Length: 346
Ligand SMILES: NC(=O)C1=CN([C@@H]2O[C@H](COP(=O)(O)OP(=O)(O)OC[C@H]3O[C@@H](n4cnc5c(N)ncnc54)[C@H](O)[C@@H]3O)[C@@H](O)[C@H]2O)C=CC1
Ligand SMILES: CC(=O)[C@](C)(O)C(=O)O
Ligand SMILES: [Mg+2]
Ligand SMILES: [Mg+2]
Picture (spheres, rainbow, N blue to C red):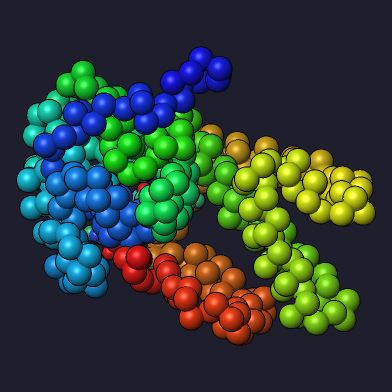
């Protein structure tokens, strides 16, 4: 840790692997985060047992990846640390099924604080409750670990009954590769509010809306979908890679001065004050629980809006032209396809 930041940020040297050594971690769920945590922990020498429903397709996958698998309640009963990596909306039911297996001194661990912060899960006394929330999609948590880089995460402690909750969480973060990049200490509330805001307004919602609007503007004006795809979606990754490596300055340095002038002068007219007001509103709906209530009710109703939004997005023209263009990349066969459906293919 250094004292040059406004909040504590922890690195490999701050973690003590003894705090997790000899413990068994039950990873409940083998999806985006689950497969990455399980495989990274296993590669770091931690005893892992994956918890899945008997009928889960992931059962055979996890076994093929060399991991022990059991039902969630059996896995939790055996484990010292239970990592809750099933979808947020099914966590309350899974928690009910496994809570008998949580003994005094065990840890219930999350990768996102939704169910604690919005009071959907009430952990028992005597159990530590912690969070290591990687700031990445799970597949890249795994890829970065394998490639000897790492991914930042947030650490928070909600219940510290043993006195060792934070040290154990930090050791867990180290074992999945996050202390290589930096682990920021925060609270469940802050993690939830910033995470939901970020994914809605910027990372997932904001950027896809921006890309689609750009694509539609070009196609509606008579330009080809192929050109619009390369311009607005494909090149986005290449531009963002430069920002990831060296901040916006590195991106501005790499593009032409024509792009830099046009971008700096016109960009704020596109994403202007109106967008900022919309962002404030989205943040408020996260802070006052309105978004959480909506999402919980949406699930109780069988996900009518989600189903519609999901289908409309997948059916957008940009997806169709994109899949045809990506299939013809000379390196296309080397890329894992349908990563989301085959989480454990790496
Ligand atoms: N997707 C991501 O990259 C990130 C997710 N998170 C958090 O990680 C947690 C897990 O999310 P994802 O990895 O996206 O989930 P996911 O949807 O990718 O994976 C879900 C897994 O849970 C299993 N599952 C579903 N219902 C189940 C049930 N009733 N009983 C037992 N297993 C069941 C599925 O078989 C699958 O293996 C959530 O709290 C999420 O907010 C945090 C950071 C990033
Ligand atoms: C990948 C991630 O960090 C997100 C966007 O918060 C999530 O998947 O919930
Ligand atoms: Mg996130
Ligand atoms: Mg999230």
